[in-house]
Amino acid sequence: MLSIVQYCLLWALWSTILSTLGQCAPLSPLDKRISQTLTSATIKWNSACVSAGGGSTCQTLVAKAAASLTSTADVCAQQDVADQMIGLAHNLGTQANMITLTQIFVQQPRDTTGSLSTPYCQRAPASSELQGLYQCQFHTVSHTWFAGGLKIGSKGTIPFGLVNAVNPAGGCPAHQNGPIPDGIQLSDITTNPGLGNVVESASS
Image (cartoon, rainbow, N blue to C red):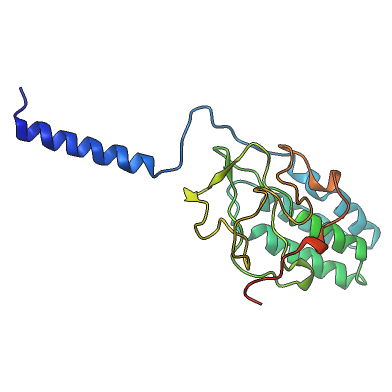
């Protein structure tokens, strides 16, 4: 039988474990992967790019854009490729349609695992046309926990330049009223990037 001292030590250890688990992001075997048809995010942009004479560069950026939406992509990859898409639009004679579609693309939700929100890039874009834009989240993700075990309020859970969390949670300038349905492309439900909804950066 355990002595009183051993019993107390085991109880203290168990209490510590329970306390630690309570501070961690909830895990569940039922948590699902939320994904999309990645290449669908740039179908309209690619069409505009090819029509403008972008040639093979269009397909190169389409591939990069698709990769930037995967759950394993760098948190700023989507913004970085959007900067390149804006750059190409200017090189082709400042194609307004390509720029608008890029502004919508940069707000497309990214794939996620464990039903967690995806963190926001924490640096400004190179292109002025992308200032204040950030991705929406899919509808069924947690809006309290983000990938990487980040709880709302931690660095990466609030878009760059903003002071407060996104409200309604999961929204973005192009879809201000909250998250978008799982797997749906933002470019299929709006043609307006929501520039009028951009909040002035606190760092400006």
